[in-house]
Amino acid sequence: MIYVVGIGPGDRLAMTVEAEKIIKDSDIIVGYKTYLDLISELIADKKVVSTGMTKEVERCTRAIELSLENPNSIVSIVSSGDSGIYGMAGLVYELAEKLKYRGKIEVVPGVTSSVAAAALLGAPIMHDYATISLSDLLTPWDLIEKRIELSSEADMVICLYNPRSKTRVRQLPRAVELMLKHKDGNTPVGIVKDAYRENQVVYTTTLDNIDYDDIDMRTVIIVGNKTSYINDGKIITPRGYKL
Ligand code: SAH
Image (cartoon, rainbow, N blue to C red; front, side, top):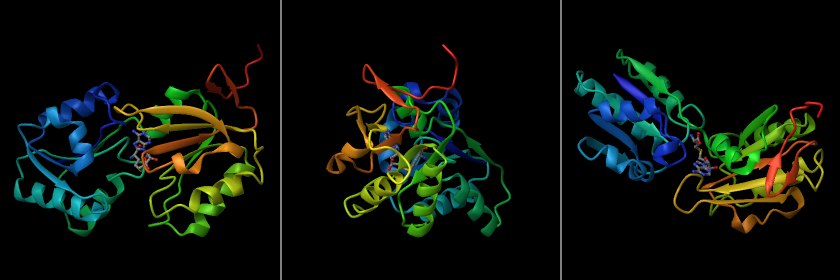
């Protein structure tokens, strides 16, 4: 049996009760070291297999192999946030098919970063929104540009994951350039770094004023729609109620 568990953004309180219970009930835990460190006190008595950041295929294959080698054990593979959003869930199913794994696989939902960040920023989503990853490691950049442009044209709130890394620095300014074709420069933007973790940073700015150097891979960005506004440090996107 394999569980693919989303552990939420970081803090134990932001993990679902189900995720915590399943991790406690597991015999073997597989994950990326940084995420395992976030749940260290839950997994002290378990067999723990940790892998590097870009080793997703290796990590999921290992989880399947461990489940095959230990058919009576519960194996949990953990992702940050939700495991179905740029996480491990899809890959586990794809590999299970390829490796002819016949055991049970269950996905346990978690609080994804955009939702965690939205709560810290006030109510910036509230309406239709798009989640776009700026990582072009697995996705052609042309397709990412198209999604940014069309969702901006459709006036969606846009949540940007994987906005900028040490080597991927051109993507975010280009994404902003595309959004500015349809969104105003004064559109509220929420920046949340390390949500629900020790070094959490939360602030608001506007599309014209994003400090790119301050954005990294631990940051999620929420860009408002045409009705979003900032009041008392919070971003609010009205749902449309007449008040
Ligand atoms: N499965 C994860 C997303 C993994 S992609 C989820 O559902 O949240 C990795 C990206 O998620 C990071 O580059 C960053 O944009 C975002 N992210 C993950 N954890 C975060 C956190 N605690 N605070 C802010 N952004 C976070």
